[in-house]
Image (cartoon, rainbow, N blue to C red):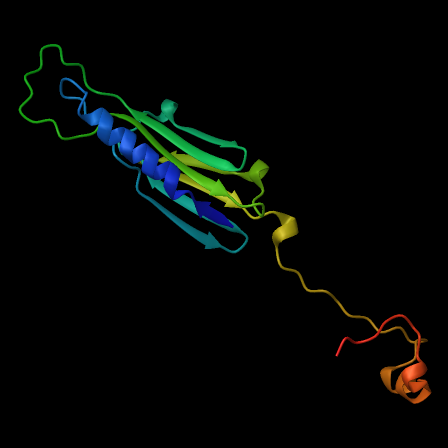
Length: 163
């Protein structure tokens, strides 16, 4: 199971807001990285928008059960430019998600295409539901045979119903 850690995201948001007032020039810091998270069969798929991010700057890291997504969008050089408006964000995008114990962290893969980072997060084999086959041996007595041969309250087999 995946869990989003709202406190780390709130901390990142607060730091971004506080840093925005200290910035100079036209550089604007990204405030968030929008993402979708859904489950398909035996894995989760996370898609995150990283518009204009430098492909070489994208980092997907798992440490101590926390998945961290990081990307950077560089600013255009100011030399010889007279800005009329500057609304596009530049700087570092970052998101953190807390992973549950049911995740196979070694099998996580990531792909960046057309401004969208897609991370595939497999569910660990031990966490997948499975059906247990119930077998009946041919030489064991059936429940009816046990009931006929039981000694009532004197049965000391060591296994008793609690109610």
